[in-house]
Image (tube, rainbow, N blue to C red; front, side, top):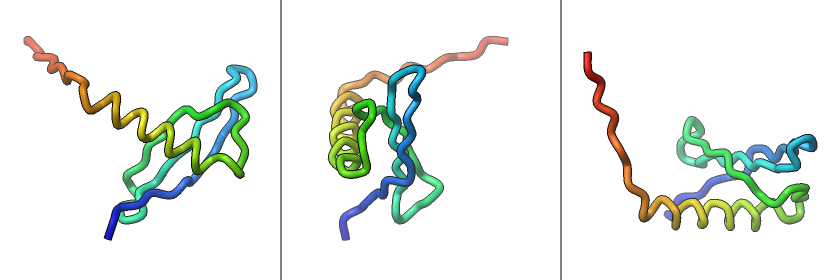
Length: 73
């Protein structure tokens, strides 16, 4: 069975002119992510905007380098 996530929230920050969608994994409700979407995005477009944001993040993280900070004491 393919994994799925559900749109849990869509918020709009009118002062900063940005919108954020919160996605929750269906099989693990403790796992969630918030991503920027098109400002003013409505409920009729939130699924497609969320998919676009998630695919964009996936492409960006596929090539990302993870750095480690070594603490010296």
